Amino acid sequence: MKHEMNPNDGSGDSSSAPSMSPDEFRRAAYRHADWIADYLKNVREFPVTTAAQPGELAASLPRKAPDQGEPIEKIFADFNSLIFPALTLWNHPRFFAWFSVSSSPPSMLAEFLTATLNVNAMLWKSAPAATELEQVTLSWLRDWLALNETFFGIIYDTASIGVMQAIAAAREWIDPRSRIKGMRGDLTVYISEHTHSSSEKAAIVLGFGQENVRKIPVDDQFRMRAGLLEQAIELDIAAGKRPCCIVASVGSTSTTAIDPVPAIADIADRHGIWLHVDAAYGGSAAVIPEMRHILDGAERAHSLILNPHKWLYVSIDCSVLYTRFPEILRRSASLSAEYLKTTEDDRVINYMDYGVQLGRRFRALKLWYVFRYYGRQGIIAMLRETLRLAQVLKSLVEADPDFELSAPVPLSLICFRHRSGDIFNQHLLTEINSTGKAFLSHTVLNNRFVLRFAVGNFQTNEQDIRESWALIRETAQRLRVPEAAMTHSEART
Ligand SMILES: Cc1ncc(COP(=O)(O)O)c(C=O)c1O
Image 1 (cartoon, rainbow, N blue to C red):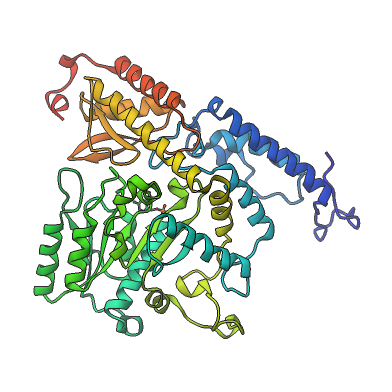
Image 2 (cartoon, protein in one colour):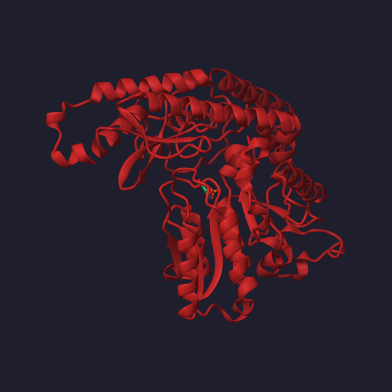
């Protein structure tokens, strides 16, 4: 295919620019669509992990950007031969690392349109439909989660940004003066040993200081111990500190533990502290009626985060924050500028007022596509199947005398280990991942190295689970060293 240039081009001088005609775009788009459809169909033929070594891809690319434009076919061919093989394939049914996520086909299509329109959803005026679709899709999701209408929703790129905005709102609530005068260093934040690192990072970035972040110990199921939380708060109050925000997890990152939110909400109420619920991963399961209990107590939270880009079949990035106190969130983050004022301001939501970002992608479109394409029942069916697959793997681990479960499995993550010790398990993980047939990650629980197997991709089926388990077992058998060859401490870990 010819690389079409401007009709007035020909001199090759630096002012000429290639221009993709609508026909060339159409052909290229069909070509890309074919590639995507083939990827979805044949995904299991591709290794989920890559053999690429650090620096290898960069070394294979030109050191300088092209001076003249290049044909789209050549760029696409290089994507196929250079970029694609050097990627870890997240949208793959054997991706079980960290949290297994999905970019479902309706979400992909919406992203295509989003990039085409390229609207900036900073103001209602700048993107009326994007603003209203954000309100509508977030009210649909709120309804599916059985949260009441006092919860106002906003989409951020990630939960890390969302929790930063939530803690900023908490600060505004407890100490509005600090917005003008700065912080006095006496506000404290409470998380558990297992809370995602983004909460502590947010406290650092916002200026609370790491010294003012309390990490509450967890129980034997890795849940925050509410009694110890209250003790920590009382000690702080006695020492002249001002407790500001508690972050409770519904689906912690290491094990998907669900903190006792009702008891934590009681404590937050008693002491007048902002309660933020991090349901970034786990919250999606609450769409299933028999799993709604995981959000018990969350209706009393001041804010809550759920990431549709984790377990609601929406492509990265898309994270939803709900708050019962939108006015406080707005106060914590809005600053008006003359050039952003519009005549509709008193009648509309301008989402830029609820976060540090001015420019905002049109993320609600992919939510709308996904919610409409699958419907609530379709999404419930997919979530239920994922939970079932997790239980299949849990039973396989339990039935094998060489392996042990390392944590309860309330959702779709299985934490387990081989009984042979930390070094063996580290080696096992490296070997499994190097096959490209499955990709797992790890964590450390009770000072022990543990494998994490997260189910969640929309294409994962029971055969993927059983074959991956067979791979894990065979790899372990191949690696098994005679007991006598292990050091004493290795055998005990
Ligand atoms: C429980 C939890 N909260 C927050 C985050 C951060 O999410 P994001 O990548 O959207 O910032 C994660 C990421 O895995 C998570 O597991």
